[in-house]
Image 1 (cartoon, rainbow, N blue to C red):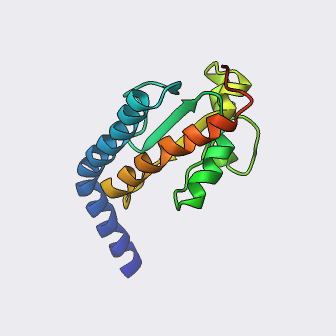
Image 2: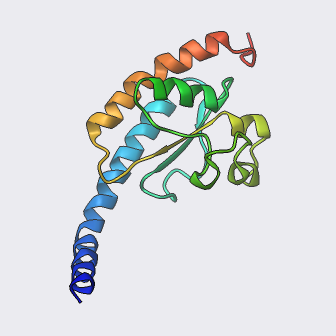
Length: 147
């Protein structure tokens, strides 16, 4: 019985906090999208701009394989991925991105950023500080970049 009562209270608290949390995560998500699309050339948003989960950003970054970005961001303490959570151990292009019409090379150049309840604005700012120089460095080395 105490477990049931505790679970009921947890559901009640989650229901109260959910609208504020959705708004907070949506603002962080939109900050990432706006910054990347306005400040990093040859990037695009995979999926609809607003009809998406409040905690999900999936970016297309041309001329670089997403896995390279994932590794470089990991080296500075940022965890992101290239595909859906259910296929995070696979290096194959995301079946979801292929299904929405991306070519395999485009899907492999994708970067999935997922926000959480404990993601702060400072975390997002740190990510946005580290991402541009990583992309710039990787593009300079990329055989995919056209001159």
